Image 1 (cartoon, rainbow, N blue to C red):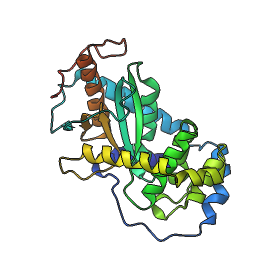
Image 2 (cartoon, one colour):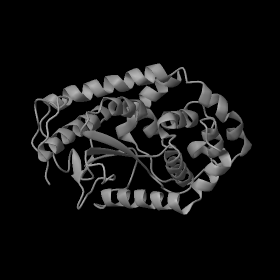
Image 3 (cartoon, rainbow, N blue to C red):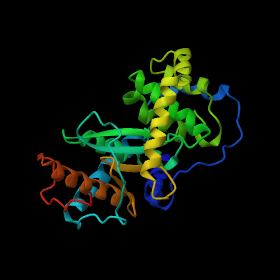
Length: 279
């Protein structure tokens, strides 16, 4: 039944998004740590269905992108003034996802994001930008950058969503997971818990979180309230859309348009290139 809930959330995604909220009361800090390892060692039974749903959504978006008219500024995307890619050193077309591990809508769309990431052509790359909206959001943003520095994100990204939203071994927005509880989750993937907590509290991680905050604030400089999940193409175009399929359709079109602006060609590109969006 839980995978049906995930698919339902996928449908409801455009109707609501995660924003900063007042945290719930903190519960016993020993609970999450005690159950992190078993959750890490065993994939959830819903994963195959969630992956299949994600792949289906990507196929639908690709088909829609090939037939749809060019994306329209203000309706399909927001043009970000002076926008730059988050990873300026990479040089490829960038898709950035602003996300939060505690956000249920990010969790619902993650199978589609994973399927998309696996199919990206060589001239496109994806980056995750953790939102730090305060409270438990900040701890998880710090945990993401700590895991990234330890080379653990590829192994733990999907699993963290599962631990919070399906297995319930971490509290997410229903409480305040401590750095020690979060470190216990990553310990099941090879991290040293004490080192992980120390890194979460380091200046280097704080600097990365602050950089992500500035990137998000710039993306919402038009006055919209920041929310997750948000997708940004090449640092310039913040994707809107009326549904999940619509979001990924627009994203596909903006990537193709960005490729046309760069003057590059790839076999994976759509044969019906939409007009480039406003610069």
